[in-house]
Amino acid sequence: MVYKREKIASPVIRRLPRYYRFLQELERRDVVNVSSGELAELMRTTASQVRQDLNCFGEFGQHGIGYRVETLRAEIGKILGIGEYYPAVIVGAGNIGTTMANQILCTTECFNLVAIFDNSESKIGSVVTGLTVRNSAELEDFCTKTKVTTGILCVPREAAEEITARLYNVGIRSFWNFSHYDIMAKYPDTLVENVHLNDSLMALCFRIKQNELASMEEAQDNSK
Amino acid sequence: MVYKREKIASPVIRRLPRYYRFLQELERRDVVNVSSGELAELMRTTASQVRQDLNCFGEFGQHGIGYRVETLRAEIGKILGIGEYYPAVIVGAGNIGTTMANQILCTTECFNLVAIFDNSESKIGSVVTGLTVRNSAELEDFCTKTKVTTGILCVPREAAEEITARLYNVGIRSFWNFSHYDIMAKYPDTLVENVHLNDSLMALCFRIKQNELASMEEAQDNSK
DNA sequence: TAGATTGTTAATCGATTAACAATC
DNA sequence: TAGATTGTTAATCGATTAACAATC
Image (cartoon, rainbow over the protein chains, first blue to last red):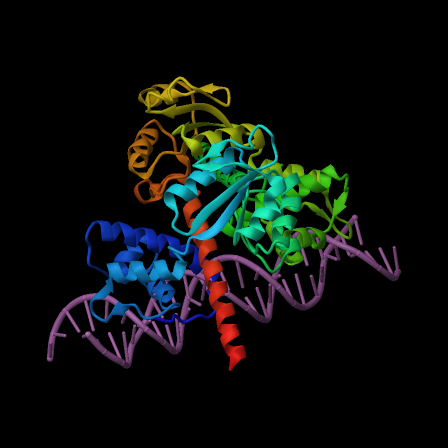
């Protein structure tokens, strides 16, 4: 089956993995059919949005019945590229690099981790999730010999600029980026997924603070 | 100074940490003033958006001149709650838990990590970023004795439900959640910041796949 | 057939961008 | 004052929600 392929809005893309997760869950519980309304309840959105989202890619439902869980899960899996196992390398074998190596190994069917690099003597040669950490100096060599699609940046910001340039130069055009280096600014023809853990913490902090301020105001209003 | 405090739209909240980062950078480079246009270029957005965002909280600029970097950074810092060091506990001393312990210790001025818990004998008693891993059984005891605002969930989904309930019961109302358990569904009066690493990877995978399909189509069109 | 639920168009809502008077 | 840039209102754009004919 060939899917419709207009440009997909970014909010839709972000919801796709969640649909997939909930459908997996339903499949595990042997649920056969699911309506847009039921899916919407799980996703905490509207039936309208569910139908709109799915219809970006095709017509998967049955009028009067809903969606077949098994089929829909499989279709969304295909759309997401699950099972493609794109070859990826991690650069930076510190805390984050090691954790993400594990993450990819254990919970992802999207990428295949083919190598981990580091430039520190103490890391090179050690084994992380079954892979021996390689010397960063071999980066270009390895990536040209092995076809690598994706670079996973687990290095500090200072190192990220150089590493990105080197990965770009051997043809890598997609990045999972944990550093604060802004890849897209310099390389607009790349696909970048940023994970800014610290920004996430700050956003939480902000909301806690706002909440405090709100309850203080309330207390003040009550005492008047 | 008391800030305006209407409800802040979520896209604005997500941009605040980025403003803060760029202003830090400018301050480090001894830049004194910055215009909304210059900030917009760094953020890769419009001058309009920058001014709209900042005016959610007050008037920080000087007509004809722009914004004083030092002042604006400090103000946004205050708005974000940087320096508040809200006391937080991590539950789950595995890969992710350990990494986040480090993250909070090294790069965040929002939270103060006061304890790490795990239920596995092999973890309890070991030292992570200077903290001895405690037995999860002590969770309630510790959190009632020490005032804890935030729970950081680094446990698998199966455990997340129970741990959330226990943290909620001792009064914790904000969560940094790495599990796939949907906290807000059951506890709508909480503040939750979800980090779904796997969803992020899937979104990247989707875009790689879309890109492939697009270039295949293009190749086909050209051969006609 | 009647009931249910889809696919899709239209209406609404919210966020971004543009415009411009105010002002340093 | 003239030039620059703000704060803020208005216009536009895009995403979400509602509505409903099509259909199993």
